[in-house]
Image (cartoon, rainbow, N blue to C red; front, side):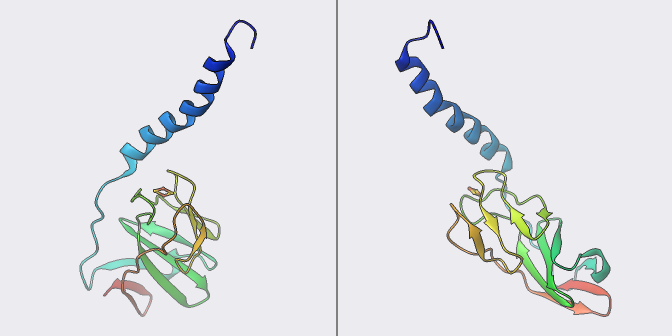
Length: 129
Ligand code: FES
C-alpha cells in the first residue's frame, strides 16, 4: 500500500486476526448445563445418520445407523460453545478445531476429545443417563 510505512502494515497484519478472535471467544464461552438423568433429549429420528445435532448443551451424533453418542457441547481447547454439527464434523467457531462424530479431534488446536455425556436409547427416544 503506497503511503503506509512497512512497519504499520506488518503490525496490522499481526494484530488484526488476534483482535477478531478474542472478541468472538468472549461471546462464546459460558458454562455448560448438563441434562438431568432421565431427561429426554431427542427422538432418534431427529439425529441424522453420519451427522448429528446440538440439543441445549449436548451434542448428539449418530456415526453409523443405530449408534448414538453424546458429548458436552464445549470445545476442549478453550471452552467455546459448539453450536452445531456440520456434515460429519463438530466445528468450533473460535479457533477452528474440528471433532469427529465419535468426539475425537479431527483438527486442532484442541488436543483432547470431546467430553462424553451418558445417553441411553429407549425405544425412539434418546435419554440422558
Ligand atoms: S475454543 Fe479454541 S478451537 Fe475451540
